[in-house]
Image (cartoon, rainbow over all chains, first blue to last red; front, side, top):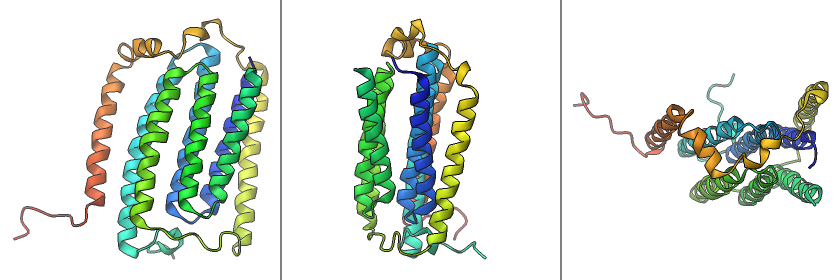
Length: 100
Length: 173
């Protein structure tokens, strides 16, 4: 059995890749997928702590996080569709109504 | 054996995540994310969380990513043209910020290394459907029922936001 720090390091790497993706991409859908990736990285660290402590509560928390992620994906994609209907693009640099 | 499986799955997860954020084509990004989610589900299996590995594949890789692909298909998105041509300063700043956050996480992880738990003897029975259901329907019953309300609210809200014309009934006439 390998140590827990390997799982936590993998979780940190995936979280960082998600952050960089959110910062450099301009397509709203890809940014959304990067947010899902970050949620998954946090889920991975929760499950590894849960497994190594022998405590089931972490896995329950991951289940709730999964259902919140599903709700968030539904609402977010609806917002993206509404944005696309208004300015025929999902490029977030073109959504600049509130910018100065 | 387990170490080999972990290394294989971890390399697969990191490679597909990098491919996802560097790919110009949105559909390819979505498919790479599916592969990433499946490899993370494999890592859940290594951690004896069978129930969550199945839920990850069913809900994430099945339902949510199909929703993403449908939206991509509906919107008919063009490929992002100049992904790395201009805004070089912006990419540099983003990369530096990512490195700083990664360093912070690793630093805080290194500070508690001696406190991290060893493998627990109870771990064998953690993660099966029976063990999770036992806790779900006793201690977390209220939160579990609240999840239903959350999902219903999300569906209703998504319909309200995404429908073409919002009809306002009442005192419009």
